[in-house]
Image 1: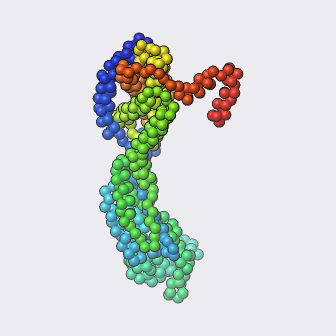
Image 2: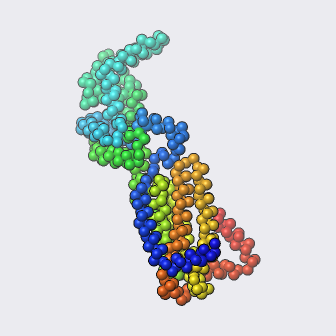
Length: 461
């Protein structure tokens, strides 16, 4: 094996143009895999698709739609929920319902207007009155019959006094919204309670939880992929941006909004995250790595990351909040591999005066790096026992990434340094601050072991 690494070091360093040309060709080919990367922020990242919970959820969404965008209407000042249907607000709600219903990715719309129209239809078709009279006829208790009779009489009197059965009529809106709590009869006249003592009918409480708040929902397609959900969410937001209700604040929220923001972050923020990590590494290399071409490890990392993520796209591993978090880990590992190779080459050239520094470097360092990589791969693949899909993907991503990065970290710096050392051999090498600290710590007497051990424990805590 040592003979192999010595021969490989000589060949890579001497025929660097062949190596770099081949790596460039592979990189260009693998970039096609980057286009196959998918971003996953839905339930598929959390649930095994063969679990009963996931199966039941698929069936539910087929029948009742998927994620819901929540619409909140909050009254301002002295306004209340009855003002939601007054004046131009009613026309705005009707237009809103119509535009939301035309969105291709929307399964159904249940707005405050939808709830009121449903109640209005029940009364118009006589269903509500029939139910009221049927309950009165089936009441076995005399006291109950008297109470139901009194309540039914009050309801029917209110119904008659409401006038035109249209949502443009404020009295009709009051009748639909509020039950008989606080209402009374003075002869044939209906006496209403104070506005703040009115009680929303039980059937409408989900849509009108209190006198100043109305709630609606826009159900998106069930079992839709992330792109469909994002498109539907964007369309709903666009419609709601044009909704202005006099006296009301409109809030659009819900899990699709959060998922859409996460998806947008993953697609744009990933590049920012990677750039920030590389910038930090560049500063560290410039300040603490005292060698020629000290930013060479960054090149190895960039190429390695491109290869790793391209392979993920090719084998179908989705990017999620968890897998994306592996990007800084891979950057750190890649930097470490490349730094060790470059640093050892410089030491072989300047300190040991090796005739073939690349050969000596690979013979002495590559086996250790490969053993460490195998240990890392085994550790990462242990995540495959997880019941959470995105944790399994995280393990696969790190296992693939560490193998790619160690290969790039060995080959690329060796080839690039081969250009330099075959043409302009390094003459001297300055010690860095880190190296001087390591030498100082290594020269401490054995009695310093116990204090250093205690200090490390305290630092860990």
